[in-house]
Picture 1 (cartoon, rainbow, N blue to C red):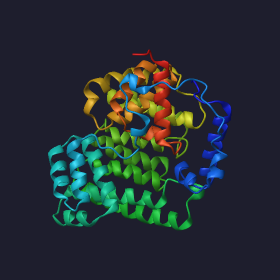
Picture 2 (tube, rainbow, N blue to C red):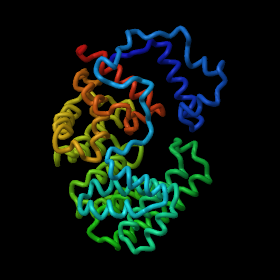
Picture 3 (cartoon, rainbow, N blue to C red):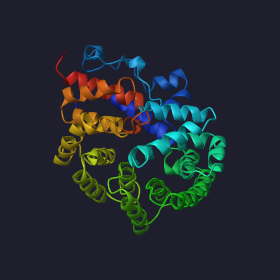
Picture 4 (cartoon, one colour):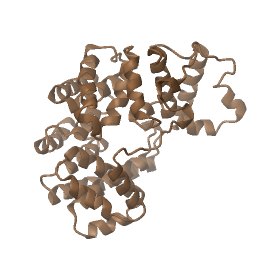
Length: 365
């Protein structure tokens, strides 16, 4: 891949990332603790780009200053329901879930967003649960999962305190009980079983126990997209699997349906994070061949659309298909909240860097 920065700047950036990770902090938070002189050690003044930065406006893209990593919910109805919940009104969320019926992928995404809101404030959820709603039980379980991860934080395992670990596992125990109650309240709904997959990963289920939860999910929806995403994480080497198990799972998913093709790109990215080259491979090409037509057609309004586009944009740049990558960035606009941009702790920076690379390699409009 073309490097936009000279070796001095790259080394300084890597040193900054390592220093932040050693303290269990994001780069942004760590930088705030540094004096101007200390920060200058990581931002050499004589470092200059090796190539001229392209003017992204020529491709119809918003300026760097407009890029934001703030959470973005593309579904306007869901965004309104979450806003209403955070203002104390649970009824729009209840109405939305009722309207979604058996659109399981969209339902899981809605439950996730409402669960995130419930983790911040469970007062509206208490009133919702008092109404006897099975949907409220699903949101309750997912909210506890979100709360558990808030307690743990996103720090590496060696920078999570004993108190944080204790709180994490305590709340996960509650989440497991809540998820099982939700499965009883709505036996045909795969959503609580999807929540259970996250619980299983956090509570460190063994492979056989995890497969038991997985079997319950796919018995209700064999192509459940959010469930496949959670399972892929479990089978990653950083959790309880290996590169071989992760790729085997991803290959099987990609072969099932176009809406699962994006998992091949997620697996490639996970491997790259572990320095196992995977972007430039036949596997990645097959995943792109499946996911790009899906994004342009049936998957245009799917909840995984922007997530898959972000992985696709990264893969396209890595494979020199920069004109196609630019088309993905046109869809993102200023939104840099997709997971693929966040792995290094600087989502806005990663988004802007990859966008520059795409424009630099694409034909000038």
